[in-house]
Length: 56
Image 1 (cartoon, rainbow, N blue to C red):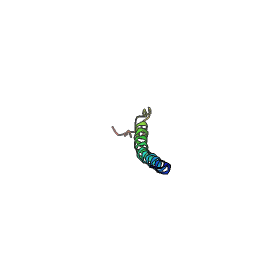
Image 2 (spheres, rainbow, N blue to C red):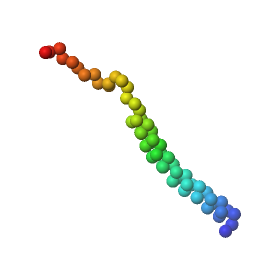
Image 3 (cartoon, rainbow, N blue to C red):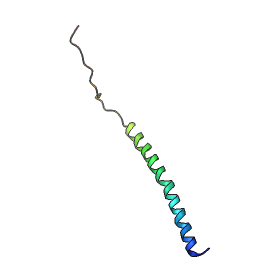
Image 4 (tube, one colour):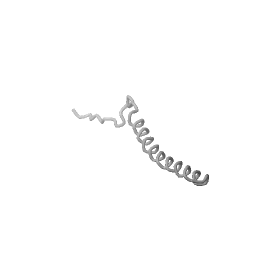
């Protein structure tokens, strides 16, 4: 193997690592962000206010 072959092999390994890590980062980052959004504590006031009728 020449020095050029070793360099090419190193580049292919590096590209393979990047191609593997990027989708995992996107998926797990999205899951983390979704969990962060859904686990926020709700406020004291409800989003929808109940209508009280004046009929008795």
